[in-house]
Amino acid sequence: MKTISINNKKLAYTVHGSGAPVMLLHGFAEDHEVWANQVAVLEKNYTVIIPDLPGSGGSDKLDEISMETMAETVKSILENEKIGQAVVIGHSMGGYIALAFAEKYPQFLKGLGLFHSTAFPDTEEKKETRRKGIEFIKKNGAYLFIKQTTPNLFTENYKLKNSDKVVTFIEHLKDFEAESLIAYYYAMIARPDRTLVLKNFSKPVLLIIGKNDIAVPYKDSLALSHLSSTTYVTILEHSAHMGMMEEISKSNEALESYLQGIFK
Image (cartoon, rainbow, N blue to C red; front, side, top):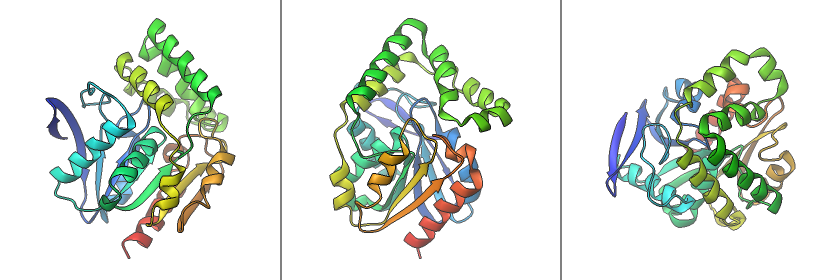
């Protein structure tokens, strides 16, 4: 892993392959490893950069965690790698960060992707769910929270057939710090509506949508598909919120098709 320092905080990231630059941003309670199945394919034709977002994996938590401060770390990595423009694709919370980055630094983007993510703000109901999550984490810690909530991100069928993979995924995250998860939750609650960012974004947008996603509902994701002038949409019929694991081939095909369209 590579590391850079931002305000005396360590930010870790991996770089794979060579070619046109693509950055993949992981979601809440994840780290760079969530993209392992995508790296194996994309690194053959692209330079794939994957940060551990601040407070995740090998990266220190920032003093202030918001979508905007985490977007600044994206810029710092691109500058450190001397990359003028890249495609940035974010999963879930990573998509919120990609949108914050697109709002402030559209000139750095060749394309923008939302993988099980949305430009809509939290509903009041969603905010309340996150607040309950914060209270649970404060009381029970991060590991028990991840152990209880992560299985809900997969379809029942996937869990039935791949229970070992779900357990391995959860165990990999057992050292997550409660403070980071709580900070992410507050940051997600506070994030604004960024549908205008998609409307104003002049480059192609990628939407990968899980038909059975309860974290980012299918109908809400579809409502984003008409906002941009050019949108690539893939619906993963057999996925909930973790399509990069649930439907690996279809996810990779969607990413490759989009990137080929960008870098043709």
